[in-house]
Length: 76
Image (cartoon, rainbow, N blue to C red; front, side, top):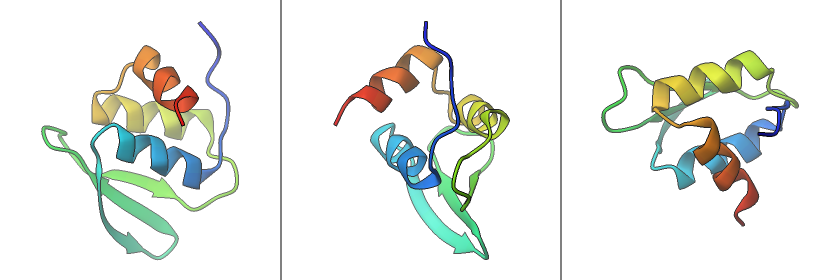
Protein backbone atom coordinates (compact mmCIF):
# COMPACT_ATOMS: atom_id res chain seq x y z
CA UNK A 1 0.00 0.00 0.00
CA UNK A 2 1.37 3.46 -0.86
CA UNK A 3 2.37 5.92 1.84
CA UNK A 4 0.15 8.82 2.78
CA UNK A 5 1.97 12.01 1.85
CA UNK A 6 1.15 15.68 2.49
CA UNK A 7 -1.35 17.14 0.00
CA UNK A 8 -2.91 20.53 -0.63
CA UNK A 9 -5.90 21.38 1.58
CA UNK A 10 -8.16 22.00 -1.45
CA UNK A 11 -7.46 18.54 -2.83
CA UNK A 12 -8.14 16.96 0.57
CA UNK A 13 -11.45 18.83 0.80
CA UNK A 14 -12.48 17.42 -2.59
CA UNK A 15 -11.67 13.92 -1.34
CA UNK A 16 -13.84 14.48 1.74
CA UNK A 17 -16.72 15.71 -0.43
CA UNK A 18 -16.46 12.59 -2.61
CA UNK A 19 -16.64 10.50 0.58
CA UNK A 20 -19.93 12.10 1.62
CA UNK A 21 -18.77 14.94 3.86
CA UNK A 22 -20.69 18.21 3.66
CA UNK A 23 -19.14 21.68 3.88
CA UNK A 24 -20.48 23.50 6.91
CA UNK A 25 -18.63 26.79 7.26
CA UNK A 26 -15.26 28.53 7.50
CA UNK A 27 -13.78 29.78 10.75
CA UNK A 28 -10.76 31.99 10.11
CA UNK A 29 -8.28 29.86 8.20
CA UNK A 30 -10.03 26.53 8.88
CA UNK A 31 -12.70 24.81 6.79
CA UNK A 32 -15.29 22.80 8.71
CA UNK A 33 -16.99 19.69 7.29
CA UNK A 34 -19.61 17.36 8.76
CA UNK A 35 -20.31 13.74 7.95
CA UNK A 36 -23.36 11.81 9.03
CA UNK A 37 -22.38 9.37 11.74
CA UNK A 38 -19.09 11.11 12.58
CA UNK A 39 -18.48 11.83 16.25
CA UNK A 40 -17.26 15.37 15.61
CA UNK A 41 -16.68 17.90 12.85
CA UNK A 42 -13.74 17.59 10.47
CA UNK A 43 -11.48 20.64 10.68
CA UNK A 44 -9.14 21.32 7.75
CA UNK A 45 -6.60 24.16 8.05
CA UNK A 46 -5.98 26.19 4.90
CA UNK A 47 -2.28 25.45 4.52
CA UNK A 48 -0.31 24.53 1.41
CA UNK A 49 0.57 20.96 2.41
CA UNK A 50 -1.48 19.28 5.12
CA UNK A 51 0.74 17.32 7.50
CA UNK A 52 0.19 13.57 7.54
CA UNK A 53 -1.15 13.56 11.12
CA UNK A 54 -3.97 15.97 10.16
CA UNK A 55 -4.91 13.77 7.20
CA UNK A 56 -4.90 10.61 9.34
CA UNK A 57 -6.88 12.20 12.19
CA UNK A 58 -9.58 13.47 9.81
CA UNK A 59 -9.78 10.13 7.98
CA UNK A 60 -10.27 8.36 11.31
CA UNK A 61 -12.96 10.83 12.39
CA UNK A 62 -14.80 10.47 9.07
CA UNK A 63 -14.50 6.67 9.11
CA UNK A 64 -12.58 6.54 5.82
CA UNK A 65 -10.13 3.66 5.44
CA UNK A 66 -6.68 4.01 3.84
CA UNK A 67 -7.84 1.90 0.90
CA UNK A 68 -10.89 4.09 0.33
CA UNK A 69 -8.74 7.23 0.68
CA UNK A 70 -6.39 6.08 -2.09
CA UNK A 71 -9.33 5.13 -4.33
CA UNK A 72 -10.82 8.60 -3.86
CA UNK A 73 -7.41 10.21 -4.39
CA UNK A 74 -6.88 8.41 -7.70
CA UNK A 75 -10.42 8.98 -9.04
CA UNK A 76 -11.06 12.13 -11.02
